[in-house]
Image (cartoon, rainbow over all chains, first blue to last red; front, side):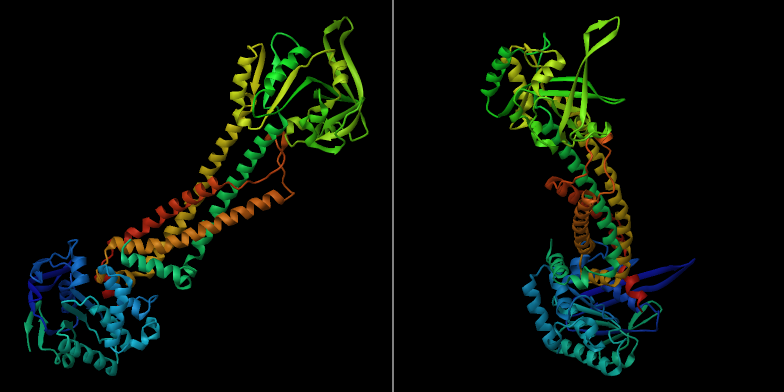
Length: 223
Length: 404
């Protein structure tokens, strides 16, 4: 087991109203899983993902990564995020002033790898994702699909146990969207890379080996 | 510095166009450069003033003054004895017996106080370095006059000047008897030290004897040293060796308090002008705040990738810090240029009667350069750190959600 979230509760205050987004949601991710979480807009899918990614803290519930209970507010959360988790967002969130290669090097440098080691690993990953000819391009010189592939390479840089993706193709046209999904499937099959992907696209979710639906604050497996 | 910080620092330096020379930094750089420039120029000019004043004081005054205690003059025998003691010491560059006294200089209806000097050995006298017009040699009936004294009395070379010495020992029912002598001006003395330039008159020692009614001896012995800063030590030694029969006064007695005052004023100006850098620092706070707002996505992604807020803060500090250091260096160059322009301009001149010297000069001091650099850099860095605190308070989720 890579990650286990048990009885996660989360609510937000909106003016005087308290909106309960998650009401005891639980999820277990094992090695090689390709999990999709679907649900209506605003149902709390992204909130669940951010809690799984230690970017937000639940009001109640427990999160276990690689057998260790983690508090996202602790000082160690940074290390877990860097070493054990990878993130892909709807927007590529690449640093505009850095080249594709430099962007992929970032998690490795944060981990403490030397520049030459980071460069070697970044080149390998970008080559694997078919971007060896775009190493020194800046994000604004890449297409949407290429930007998202660089973003995927960055998520995989430290060989994480789990990659969390929030609508990774939400901003792409159908052609680039299927290209990115193809990459994700390949990574899952060839490298046994685990993914938790939040999407509202039921058709794309069909490519996952486990599908969960978040409804009324609770996760239910639907496929 | 961790690998990430080193990488970014290298990146900022390697690609300055993308990271350093940006429009958002222009006004910040201008503010810093202007304030540091004014601070540097102020300090350079004050340093120049301080050095100039000290140089003039030491060049145009004796480093050690030896005068009699119990008599009006030092007789020839004592003078030779004193000179032989002085010249036994290493580091003495010259020692000159002379006659010196206050008297009056008169032309027509104009009368001014003057300081008469007659050197035993004119050929070796230090006044010769400051003759701005005319000749250095003085023959009988000739005189050298201070620049401002000549100006006040509307005199120039070739004119005659009457010197009057009131004999206080010859007061009668007809009033005060004074000895007078008329001299032709053959040279103008201008050392730059206002008090000297408006009072000095130098004539042949024999004629000075006649005027002052001192047929033998000297009123003073002026000693010059290779290192004037050692004057107090030499003075103490000389006083002991002369068995305290003479008054031995090093230059520090009458001029050091003035130099200390000037030094204190210099640092006071430095403190006051440092506030200008602080005002520029407020501009830096606003600039850094804007940059942080502009770079929230970058901050969010670095946070998501596992970078610690402290590390992210440092990345921004390095980036703005490099710009600030460049701005400080530009400011110091600007300050140098400003000081040079002030020195070269001919519009504003110092009032000699107020500031002792009438020329503005600047001096570049390595210590001052370092002090300005470090003070400005520290002040600017403190200002950079204030807005960077926002980074720690940023919620990654809010930033990511905002873009959906």
